[in-house]
Image (cartoon, rainbow, N blue to C red; front, side, top):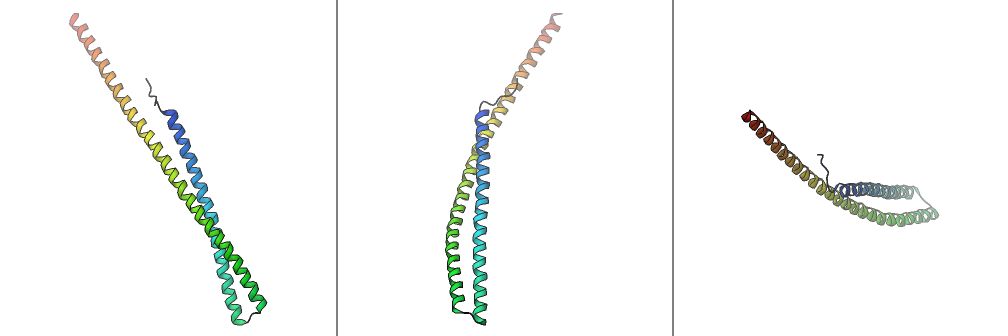
Length: 148
């Protein structure tokens, strides 16, 4: 007799849910990385622009150039504000997806544990059945030898 886990279909479904949660988590990580990289690039650009502006102020800069730089920095700051919010949202989503993945992993572990316990019971029953058969054979042989 072979072992059949009675919850095999449920366990397979839970494993698929776990795989989907893993893919969703990976996607959330990638999205977070993408948005965080964009924020970093904007911050770096702003820093570089401010450094350039400081150098130009020391060497002399027209009012028109100064206005242009200030307007460009203001636009960068609006973009930075937007991407800071996007990073917060992406981080929150990433953490939420991570929690979902952990829950799915725990569910799968529970079913694996149940399967393992049922398999141990199956093996124990098989051993007991084998022992009964061996006892019956021994009794049969004893009776056969005593009777002849």
